Image (cartoon, rainbow, N blue to C red; front, side, top):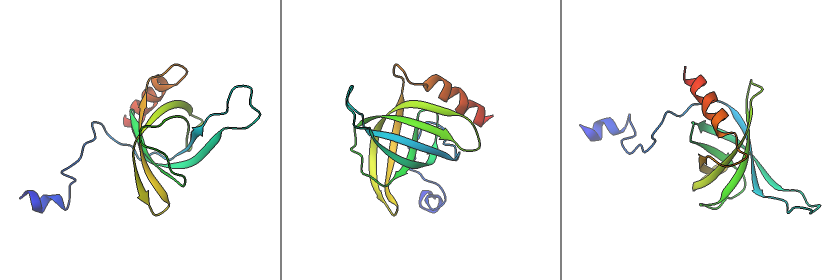
Length: 125
């Protein structure tokens, strides 16, 4: 029976929460500019595949290292909501458009994680 159902359901699902298919443009600061340095930050632009209160999957055209900590700017489409978040790269997989990346969000000074979680709760209702 399990084999029959596996073609319809992902029986190896490890997600703890609902993922939302909300369009968002995401900017990942790959390398921050040094204080006082005239050089700008190295920023990747990417698209969200799905998002949740505690993480997201994105497609990027540049490689990121698993375990890396990055600042994100997330702009929700058809909304004026913009969030500054901190994430850890949990995994990276090859994708036809570059790399599929799993990001875990966490609470950090200067981040807007509380506002983000409130916004995600609103999308669920």
